[in-house]
Image (cartoon, rainbow, N blue to C red; front, side):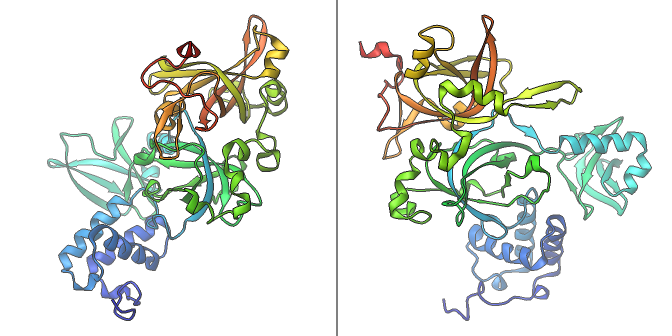
Length: 444
């Protein structure tokens, strides 16, 4: 196709689109705060990617309307830009996953429900709340700008409704459109930076993945490129959170030797090895802590917080440590505290730790592994060059990234780690048996 005839290169005017297509694209622009031109560009890309349409002007009006409808419904939970526009390329490695997923809209839904129960007229007039009402056999939504029809049967709970007293209400966007009152997400921890900053400053980030992206397997320690949206908040508590679009995982590009050169020079490719990248102070600062120094790291970096019940709590820092596995429980056990109902563990030791404590209390550090970490990161295996995963055996050295805590055991305060990610190297690991015993006795 010639450059001048390529519809992706030619400038298209908004008024060339059918009116109902413009209406839907305008809704999306109002919802996301993006320009109508940006939404149009994303829609054109969507047509090519999803429908192999390289000249939308040749398509029928009703087909374009249906495509526009599916486009804004599909993309209602994120900006339209996908992995390209409004995203920034980060490079580095995933180091772990948050053990808990949380509803990102729970607080706003709770606050809107409180608004409604305290003064329903004022809540409706704010434009932030819609009220579900029965009109014949279907639900309609009463808003400050009028009634929105839903075509949903009153025999069912309204799809975007939640209870406030005896009423069903919904959240409304600034454009007056209803949107889901739940958006459950999980943080994935990423060690890296923007592609131009990677060799200057390596930081730990939280990549926020919500809804259908919440639970996705990641390759811990494997260098990769990701497309994220930069934080815009001024709140220090959330400035490390990178937001994502709906197709985030489709755009994660794990790198092999041929792609390493994209963001590092040949002479420093060796530093991408997690046993180097995760452990050197000039890369990760004080985040890497030797096993025998964990108590001091906790004391120096523990912080207090006030819970929703008003009680004071303590939380330790996120650390990376290294040790030799001397016990593990890859089969897991039931846990009422884990959202998956299962928890796992391994214990790390080192020659210095055993020299200090012998074989008694404090001679190893327990790493508690959540169901999410087990299911999404495969912490009891290593990855071979061909991508195949293989279990490692005890006495294998591993890296662990997790939240440091202290607990009392027989009157002594002993460190433990709530592991978010475990990295084992094919080169360094002792190969275990598949589907069998991973303990040291298998070699006897």
